Amino acid sequence: AQRVTQPEKLLSVFKGAPVELKCNYSYSGSPELFWYVQYSRQRLQLLLRHISRESIKGFTADLNKGETSFHLKKPFAQEEDSAMYYCALIAYSGGYQKVTFGTGTKLQVIP
Amino acid sequence: ETGVTQTPRHLVMGMTNKKSLKCEQHLGHNAMYWYKQSAKKPLELMFVYSLEERVENNSVPSRFSPECPNSSHLFLHLHTLQPEDSALYLCASSRQEGSGTEAFFGQGTRLTVV
Image (cartoon, each protein chain N blue to C red):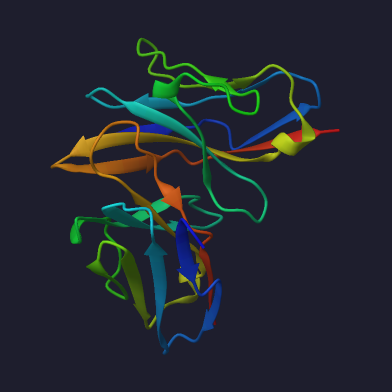
């Protein structure tokens, strides 16, 4: 069974400070990992996916299979980054895709 | 509206009522999901439908009854709910085939059971 762990429920940083949202996973197969973001009063939406190796809104995340981690990073936090962030893992089981989310980390950027 | 649409956006119901939540997607996806989002458990998978067949039921009480009549529509029928069932219910859809396919979410139905 797969599991996604986000150890921090709340992360508060000052504007301009670096951000790192932690995510660890447990999965016996080859994982596909994503970060989703939920801004206040908006729907949950995809932020980035590991296979794209892209940077979205200044955020990056590198899959570290040795440490089974997929931490989300941004060098300089902005106030508009304040939101709820969820790490997610996609596993294929019995011919269908199952998405498992972590419990989420609330990022609070202090002006 | 494109993407995943959920109706109603807000619902208040009594414990003896019967109501249904509706989800519709026009993305050509073939898998649909119901999630429950509350303060205690932020994102809790309830049901998964793949190719219109229920493939997962995460120990959800029988007072929640899903229905997937076709690949574009998903319902969650509610009856004799409890106040602790008050939460945001999210629908999502995705493609089952291929890698790197993310789930798209609706805006949710805010359910209050009184």
